[in-house]
Image (cartoon, rainbow, N blue to C red):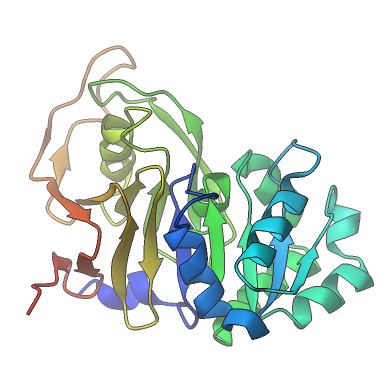
Length: 272
């Protein structure tokens, strides 16, 4: 009933990381990305565009090098002209894995949207190349993207701003730093704007691995909260910004390490 819309476009794995992933100890999330990308034979393209930190890309080059990958290219894309440059596109064409750092997802979408790089990321993923993103790099994966907003204990009408992401996955909206920044109500509010969206909130040092088979696998020390609004009712459009809406029939799942959620069935997959 819902799966065709949600899973449309997932031909390669998408690894959405909630931010603050372990970079120095077991590094199970980043290690999993390396495995998906080809292990020691991987050719990883790192895109640090979202970050204002000067050496963000080089930090990940070092991490992936420690995990056995010799071929890591940092794509220094600072504006839309860079994103259309032949040299950048050539490196991306040869990548067996693409990694987008954290930072500001609006900046990332603004620079990459409708450029050769942005289109090629989609094309490479369509051909099975895994794409990973942490924090802002996770939020930008969906077609409808959270562009900013507020946290708080109660959903509010204007709690979040939405814009267009890179469109690697449809009918899903991804939020990150989730529990740590008290964003549960924000995600519920976003799904109430359009109950056709499946809300996916990812804790820090936690990842949601979207498979081509339409299953989310949870990796890491936290959990992934999923908001299914397919039967949701609310009056969010009729209340003013200061008045909390009434929201009912929202189905919420907390999925921890090793748990799986079916996008087609909209349910947690029972472990054998």
